[in-house]
Amino acid sequence: MKTCLIVDDSKVIRKVARHILETLNFVVGEAADGREALEQCRALSPDVVLLDWNMPVMSGMEFLRALSSEDLPRRPKVVFCTTENGMAHIRAAIEAGADEYVMKPFDRETLQSKLQIVGVA
Image (cartoon, rainbow, N blue to C red; front, side, top):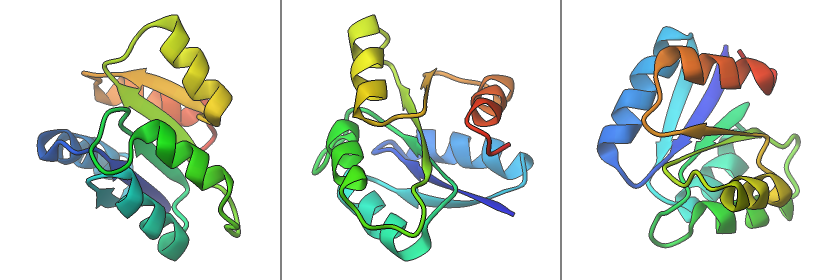
């Protein structure tokens, strides 16, 4: 089974994303900020990370930069999931190492298609 780590400071978003991912047969983990997510990536090495942009403690961009310097057995695919929709934000996310980008709010079909694009669905 594929694994996904949902990284978002909103409990509601994590709950909605978890429900969608479980219907797509993912084993799901959750983290409320980038630092917690980094610890989970070290321990669990998920297939994909669904990553929020704006979070306390460590933002999505800070997490991406930290993830790239980690010595992991394999790097998870990263799908940025955010309300930031400007082209500059999207470009910055991709340049920082994100594999794909999805806008909030999202539905099952949109998320599934992004996961297919990055090769994990």
